[in-house]
Image 1 (cartoon, rainbow, N blue to C red):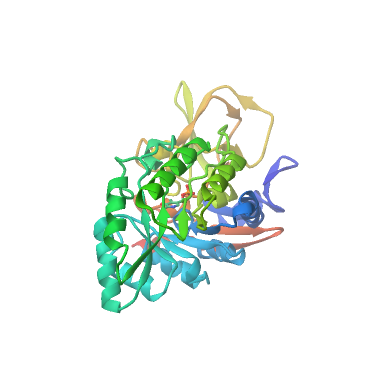
Image 2 (tube, rainbow, N blue to C red):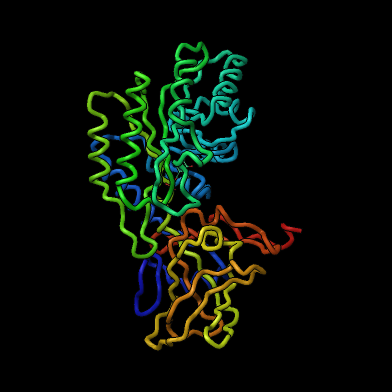
Length: 403
Ligand SMILES: *Cc1c(COP(=O)(O)O)cnc(C)c1O
């Protein structure tokens, strides 16, 4: 994705063409970027040959999941809906893991019947429930147990999941109790220790701590896990963040795997899809409010809630570049009746006018999936670009769909 003669392109397709043809707002994805992300991820961890399960909650577009499947990527699902989607997209059940703190009976039952690789349980009562269902179905079920390592991922507070005050996983004490209680179960086979400490992690340090605690846990329970599921969480560069040092992370894992036969599972979401998506929008009005200008867009927190929900920052760039800039503060806002419906303030920007197309970057993960019809706004389409071709992979909603 880059400018060519001052106009922004996704692969060989000019954004202006897409906005004319399909209107705004619209999500646009690049096949090439997804492919590169997958290949880079595989290469980074080639030495340990992990099972890579794409975290479907980060982007559940059916076509995107089919692309993942075409590169032999599995799936990490957190609901019956995501599980059905993954299966329908052709993902081998042997490559599907099921996470989440609140799986219901019918979800667990469906997962068992479909023979997915693992259900990662997150509480003692869930383990009991899975055992009951397995007994009823007279099956022996492979499960993982999610450890809460009480590790600070040093990411945004709202996307941290690995501290003891977070609802995810079980503490070391409970983990040991569950292992001891169920190690000889006729219906359960605990084959995996899983962890996931949060999202948008930009250093290997939190992972270092996490792995230390995983190792200490294994030492305490004297138990062989066929799988160690290290979750996802690898951050991307929205602004000036650093990327994780993958070499260091890999070396930590290689060290950890000494004297073990465990297979590593990863559950990346953002790192595979985050930078592959754009949200395009048209300026409806520009409102001069003295000390700043409000740039009012035709997209808002209903299409992309990350800024409003956890103060995330996304780069905003013009479709057409010019060298005329103004020094006035610009606040980019949506049409939704909420003060938090804002994509951020920039100290300066190029001169803008009504009708201009702007691009919000890096929205491939936790973008469309978190959208809503708030203010009864129909959602825009999703479009996939591959070289000079593009197609709709989710159509624009109509108001009549909503009424
Ligand atoms: C959300 C989630 C992931 C993916 O996290 P990313 O930061 O997008 O890589 C992986 N595993 C679990 C259990 C999750 O809840």
